[in-house]
Length: 321
Image (cartoon, rainbow, N blue to C red):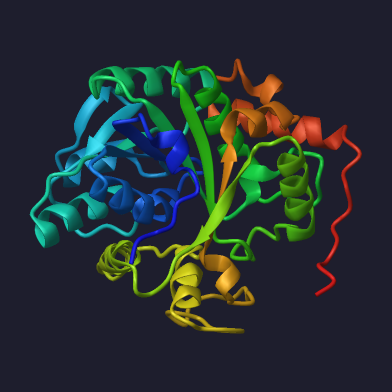
């Protein structure tokens, strides 16, 4: 069984595709089912992530490939010393050790928009060009505009979306996986659904599809996640630790590892991919224009706080069902 992607018409003539985690952390893991599905179709697919990993530590415990010192490098090979947080490195290790494949996981340092745009351009040139960029969000806070209470960790997604807007790539897609998983971020899913409805009216919603346990792409995603999470004392994704049991049929207050202190309603909704025109999403974002010239993540954070303090925020609402 294959993932029934509603974006195949957009990717029909695309042979080189970059899948990039938009919001940092474990977002790139939410792109793995897309990676395996598209690769099985004969596409050349690359993986990247707006990272929270420490580059200096990565260079000590592994041998990443540097493209821009301190800003862009590819995790590869094996991790030679246990570490509590290096998801890209352990994912590259899973590919090599468990599957016999050398798959670099490119890491963009956590910066502002201008350096990230430069990093994207450098990576794309290094890869020999790409025809499509799929930004992946674990959750749905990338769809927030900045005028909502319960906007989650919108800043990182906005930085990635704004950087992507400047790239000369014919196809730019935002993929969201994990509706309802962002309990720690107190995301208002009422506002997320309202934003989705607006994007649909604008013709920017490409459709949705569901992961199921029978799909090899899902099975590989789960196996890769478990491999990384179960490294000694390594951090876990509170997003994918909800997506995976949801797809496997868990419901209600279920905790995959018994470590979460923020209950979330586990349901099949978490296993749905939602696809949007990334260009339209960023044009609706109220923070993007103010972030375009930012250099550091600290600059971006300050601007986001100032902007939101001056904005009449849409109230937090609960879903009526």
